[in-house]
Length: 137
Image (spheres, rainbow, N blue to C red):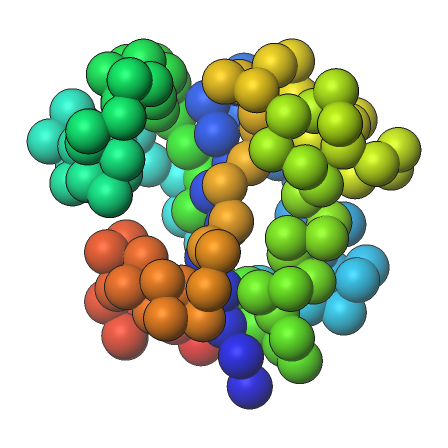
């Protein structure tokens, strides 16, 4: 059973749409194997997004991700990573297909409501960043 990580970002948490987003995952046949609400420290956000450290948007991304609580979730199911990415829609909500999470809930390319693992390999790394194995059911 494939697993992937989803993060509901501070903008979507502030809009109080967490339940609507989680229900979309379940409606698409994904199972919630673990979920929790947390607030990232600057150190955590910098470590999580370290792959982008040299990019010009890194500081703004970190500042955004520590601006409020996030909801991190392990999604499980057949082709979980691809399904999650399809549900999220394009990174830029202006380009996201109607009915996707970003089309419905994101404000901009920066405040784009959700993060999802971009590969099965990265999903494992990202899941382990947020969850101990004993927390995943």
